[in-house]
Length: 338
Image 1 (cartoon, helix red, strand yellow):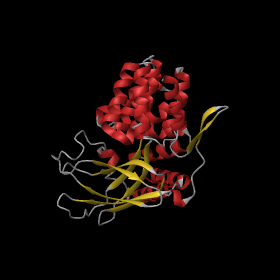
Image 2: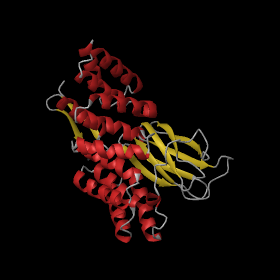
Image 3: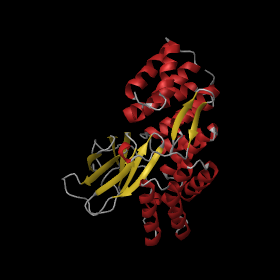
Image 4: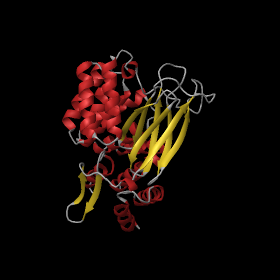
């Protein structure tokens, strides 16, 4: 398989943030960014609570980010008793990230599986600064991203945007984020999330512009760099993507998403050895939630002519994600390799 064909496959597998993918025998995989599943019985949800190490409720409104291999998928804030909720989620593997300010507690990530028709209930215990259960790399949120100086009205618009995004109301989310930015142009987190929502709509140029502005405001902000890297991979601007994602990795070397997209970008410029290292690291860090890294490793090994390695990782990918959207395609590749 040529790299051009492999690139079409990888974009189908990981760039569809808001829509579904389907395979057509006449034209190959295509991306449908506007078609959403509306059958509520096919959806699930996550209900969670954040508690302190001693089991007491948190009293502040902490930001909760819902992550997949495609990047951030939703935002929420805890209430005064640490509760949060994400509704109308497609079944699958997700990662919930709790972000805190200050050095007393670390950023905490927890994997969760969403099932059809039922809520997944989780409790996340904050890890103290020296806890080994929390993420041990550098914090993924800078002072600028936390937005301590954000005016109350801008923060309210941001919270409304987060609620709309959680309800799959992308247009409403974008409108609220734009309003938040108009009130406070230096709102790094709002610009980063606006870039994510624009990416979901396939508006790559607009997404890149917002993310670049966020980075210009705060060069130590991790999330805008990660999201810009995702946009650049979608645009096939692989050389710049490698640079941006490597800078993101210096801020958070433990991010499986940054490693995954860095691997895709390295593949795009033909650095297959570096791509192999990044993809392996993504899977090592992210586990089953990032099994798609195995799929791309399979593509990489096929490009290198290493059929046995390709067969092994593709079989491992199917074992980890038997109901993946591209499962039938992968089975065909495996049959071809045997």
